[in-house]
Image (cartoon, rainbow, N blue to C red; front, side, top):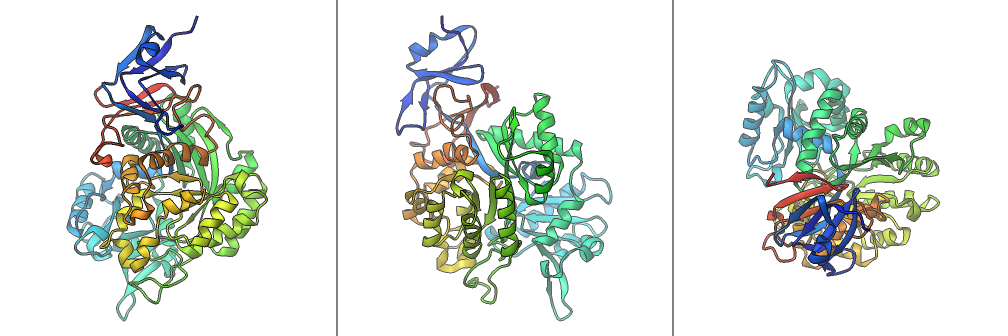
Length: 513
């Protein structure tokens, strides 16, 4: 006799995303796995006395979204500290910071996250003069959305300026007075001094995972910086308080420690897995620090900067790959992308290792061919397309090259494995799917099915999880999301509401509960 299901979703439109257009009316889940899909009548026969049966009322069931590039503690920080992502102007951003200042003790850090000046009428960074108006006695920091640029007040410069590289502190005037705008390595100083303790990190992670599951996310590949997030993830997992799967991509300065304790890529149990070794190459377009082969349109003397020098990248990749680690390298400009591919090509078997390039914003035709030939995963963020319109950030920085960015169609057609993530800008898969299917260059748009697969099975592949995650098929883990509307039919995919999110067969978000 067949055992009863724990959970049945019925009267639904279940898309497996394994075969094109394959749909079912219902799905049964038992012991954290999908056990059967089919007609509602047949699946409801698996309902026992203790089975929860959910009538979806025609809603769409999909594999859960896997965000292949995010920073979950940063999502938590924007939820707990000042959220600047909704600011429409300098004034809005400063108002949010002033409000945050009233919530902290005198002299404590006033932190804001996620401002994007490219959407403002006055398109400039936040400066020390702006932030001095928030407080002249407490340290104030406003992190730009890309986290490669920040504004700080005079208190921060007085206390920590000597620890920051002069090359990463912008100045103006004949006296080279620091403007309060800092980039790259200078920001690392602030990450170190504002690192949350274990208790605060747990608060941030809990807030972020609630936000993630409410947006249909069942798993994340977290680009972890600092030392407390991994232990907090494992603490929560052991205590039954972790509501999504976490693949930890450790920054390269953790390599020796990981090797010493014997943790390798794909080690782990429960909901927490060790992922790749993460490194940088260049910066961002927003900060004009992405490394280009030709100058920026709005700064003809600048071609960006190396965050990690090419020789160092090659040495790190060779060392980590030889030790059996997957590599994950941030590369945005064309020079940076080529440098990473050169380093991967020098390793034994980049395809088997599934080495990844994060962002891949300005890739040449030759680079795309090399991705396919080497089997390197393109881990990309369709949210970035919000900057690719005619009057957007990319147009300012790159001119007509804006239409050569984020070439998802070319990558997919070349046979490149494509994984979607958000980079917290914001953490919202349906926004990413919407943007990827409405690319500013129509020739680079994906179909809805292709975009959804990049956020499900594509991200699963990037994390060596394609045999247990990424599709709604029998005996895979029961990680699914229920949407109010069909993304194939909705007028606006980004506005579709998530009704339910299920991880390992457990309902972790239910909008109507």
